[in-house]
Structure formats: structure tokens, C-alpha cells
Image 1 (cartoon, rainbow, N blue to C red):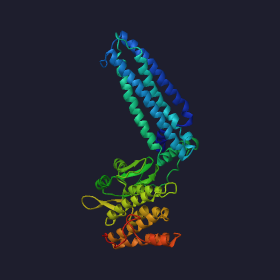
Image 2 (image 1 turned 90 degrees about the vertical axis):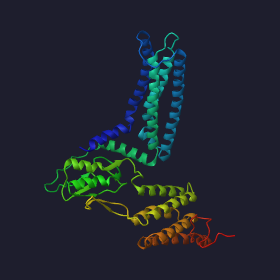
Image 3 (image 1 turned 180 degrees about the vertical axis):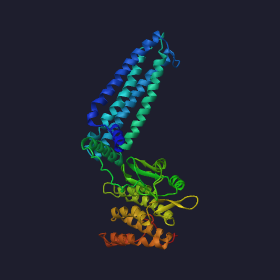
Image 4 (image 1 turned 180 degrees about the horizontal axis):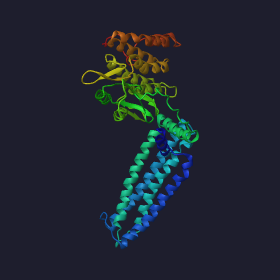
Length: 427
């Protein structure tokens, strides 16, 4: 069943409150094992010398002391980082920290760091001028490397979690695990004879469509003389079983179907590398966050509009909308859904216009943006901008003071403070 491997992966990724005691037990076990190994191994080396890095007594003592003090300092840093993460999560919702069990998940990391420091201290106590446990000191260095690698990986994971999207994914995956364990799905009904559609290829796991490898799909389609239609746009979230590709006029063999599915890359989040609309989404997010009452920074919104204008000018003469990829002989092999000019404008301007409707800087900067894009774009695309001008006019008239409304009616590429249209440079 396709959902089973996914459910197991999710249960390993996010820690249930019922997994608290195993985490604590593993942390204690790591510390206890470090104490025993640090005491037993030097005694073993005293009677059975083995290899390791060459140290004299003074160098070994200095190395072990530096390891112990450095790891203790690193543990304090990690504790501070985890505390900040928990505070950030609680700012989003006070209930999320307890639900997702971040601190319990970090207990194993604390156990590994503490075990490394304790191991170094126990070995340090057994270093003598007459006996230097070379293997024990070498293992301390190895443990430092491993602990540092685990720490960096854990901090990277925590950084991903504290983002808004990361928290949403964490709660969603936890909820999926609970649903799978509490409300078991019913067996799917058997397909009716003659109603199957083997030419529709579906997703095997959940994720965001990050990239569609058009040339690879076109190559497979050319080898089997079929046409492929991508049913999901880049940037869309899909679940297992979601239709991704439709192959016509006939199904392809199983190995070719696997190659087609692999050409649709899924991941946890959108990537700007193959998803230009996501870049616009990020610029808009910066602008509307700056326009929120808590921030009230319209200048940042104007700076975002500078970059949005540059993007729109570059797109004004480029083909947009659904596109077709051909093989080397010129036959159509792949149809890809992509946003058109109107969808790009809605993404780039609608929310900024809505949240900045009472900001003089934003209104004037948007007017200048529309003028510049209309001057550069083809007539058909320039005509689409008329609706945005109408909305800007309504926003300007809604300002409470007539002089402010008159000021808002003037385009300004700087928002406020730029030269009036047609004005010279002055004396």
C-alpha cells in the first residue's frame, strides 16, 4: 500500500509525547556508556597497548581538557538555541511546543554532547607520565567530530522547523500519523471493469512539485511515440495518488512510467531555481509583511516593488502560459501548465495593492510601476493593467484628505520624494 512507507517515515521524523521516556533513556544510556568506556578502555590499554595518535602525557592532558571544556561550552550554546526555538514556536502558538516535543527530541543530542565531555574527563583522570592511553585519546577526538556533525544537523533541522511553513509541515505530518493510527482507512473499492486509466501516472509520496524535467520526459515520450500532459503545475502540493502525468494515446511500459514519475521532482518546499513564480511570491511576502500594522515599513514595500517591476519588465515580451516541449523531430511531446500574464500580475500586485491601499508611498510607486510596464509591454498585455489603475484610483480617492488624494494620484518611482513627471534636474 503506497501510504505505508510514508507513514513509517513520518513516525520516525516527529516525536510523539509517548516517546518521551525512550528519548530520556537513550540520553542517560549514552552518558553511562561514555563513563564506562572512559574508565574501561584506558585500563585495557595499560595491559594490551594498541594503536592511536602519538601523544605524550602533557599533550594528551591538554587535548582532553580542551575537548571537555569545548564540548561543555557547545552544550550550553545548543541549550540556548533550543530554548530560542521553543520561544519562537510558542510565539506562533503556545500549544505547538508541547504538541511537537522539540525539547524531548533534543535530549538525545544533549546526551551525546554530555557523554563526550564526560568521556574526555574520565580518560583525563587516568593519564600518567608512565602511561598515555593513545587509543582513548584518539576516540575522544572522533567523538568530538561526530558530536559536532550531529549538532550542526540538528540545528539545521531546528532552523527549518521554526519557519511558518516548517511548523505547518510538522503539525501536518504529526496529524497524519495520528490519523493513520486512530482512524484506519477502508480498503479501496475494486475498479470497475473497463474503467481503469493506466495512462494516468500518480504521485507515490506527498510533497511540493519542485521541478519538472521537460527534456527527460520528452525523450521518454519520443522513444515510445506518446504525448505527455503534466497535470500539476510546479509549486503545487500533491498527496500520494494525486495524478501527475497523463500519457496519450497509449500507456507506456512500467520502466518508462518510472522514469516519467522520477522526472517530476517532489520536495518539502518550493525552490526558486525552477519556480520563478515562487521568487515573486517571496518578494510579495516581504512587501505585505512590511505593510502590516505591526511593522508599518512602506519603504521596504517600495524596495520590493523595485524588484517586482524589474521582473515584470523582463517577462513583458516573453511567452507565458501553458507551454509545449517538442522532440528533435519537432513533434509535441510534453504539455506543461505555467502561469500566464494575468496570473503573474495577480501574484505580483494584487496583495500589495490590497494591503498598501492607504500608503502614499505604495500607491505612487505602483502607479510608476504600471506606467513603466505598460510602456514596455505589448498592447494586449498593457491593456490588462487598466484594472489595476482603476483600483489605484479608488484607493487614492478613499484617502481622508483631498491634498493626500491628489498626492497619491502622481506616479513616483521612489514612492515619495522623487522628481515630478517632466520636471528638469534644476539649476
